[in-house]
Length: 145
Ligand SMILES: [Zn+2]
Image (cartoon, rainbow, N blue to C red; front, top):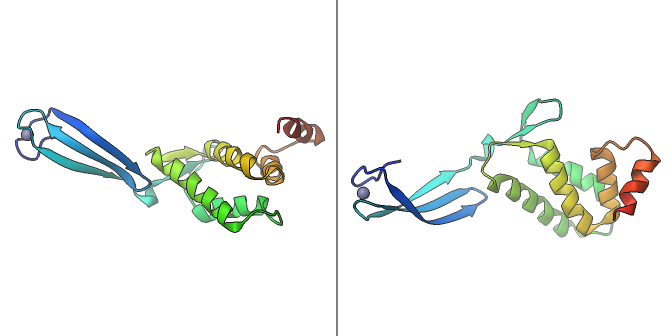
């Protein structure tokens, strides 16, 4: 990147602010001293999920919501709280600024948050996500709570 005023290449970042939509950087030219802002936008369409078998598909928030809502079915947890959790998860994924995320990374993120909200929902989700083979897997997971 060059300075838009004098084309000098030596720039300093004086301030950096992250948001779910992108990263704003305040830059200062080391030659002419002028300041300007750059905005690195993370397009919502550009996030891809890499599945266990290596397949790649576009990040789908509805799918994330469905999976999470299923785990919370009939649990005494406010819808608001669940929605907030989903927002936080999406934000955390996008904030990293990468274009790809592994399903395992999303899964771990979800489980970490669920564990704090509702243990039953957590076990339900973990059983599907971790593909529990038998009752001993459940027992092990419950012991860790
Ligand atoms: Zn300059």
